[in-house]
Amino acid sequence: MSNKKSLEEIKCLCKKFRKDIIELLYSKQTGHPGGSLSAVEILSVIYFMKANSNIDDKNRDRIILSKGHAAPILYIILSELGFFDKSELDNFRQLGSILQGHPTFKTPGVDAITGPLGLGISFAGGMSLGMKSNNLDSKVYCLLGDGEMQEGIVWETVMSAAKFKQDNLICILDHNGVQLDGLVKDIMPSSDHVEIFKQFGWHTFSVDGHDVSALSNVLDEAMTVKGKPIFIDAKTVKGKGISFMENKNIWHGKPIDKDCYEKAIKELGV
Image (cartoon, rainbow, N blue to C red; front, side):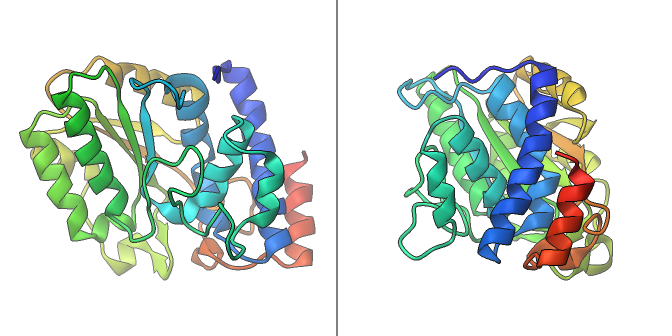
């Protein structure tokens, strides 16, 4: 399965994906727009530029959406790559569908079940250790949410991955500063994540999570790191691309009504 795209192609796809997210969630009146919109560039660069996602290759990379509520953008990308027909998106969050509200193994291309926050990075840590033990030349990419960093299970994985020198594990934080009930800094403030991960023994980077060129470059740098797991703090905007959704916690999982749908599509200009 060939999935490689140029930077310009990625930028065009990201515009399309934002429109696809809004149309999908409006049509179903359910789902999570804010966190899906903030993760568009990160997941697009991973899937279309960096990772080997060929399901038939035992050395393929694994990609885990630990912030599982952003499933809409994951499903849109997987359908674009041909893991399943795009018509399946019509069944999003419907009873018996292969596209549930959070990723499950029912969905072709999904590497881990991620509903409870913190579960995805635990999968990622175990996978990367197993792959390293078996001398597989593969990477595990794990996308986290910053509200998710409040889960204790996250830090158990952070400690163990450093101990076992899991340099095939790349964890990326979708750092949009907003969670379900408000701003992260108001709900459970934390220190600089880059410094925290560095103290735990990880190799760290910071990047603009909406700059596809910068994301591409930092992921290339991450590939060269030896002896340490990698943490990338990607600064993003919740609801990116739609002014009335940006940085608003109400759009974590609010249904999109007709008026907001029309405004969003007009702003996206696609």
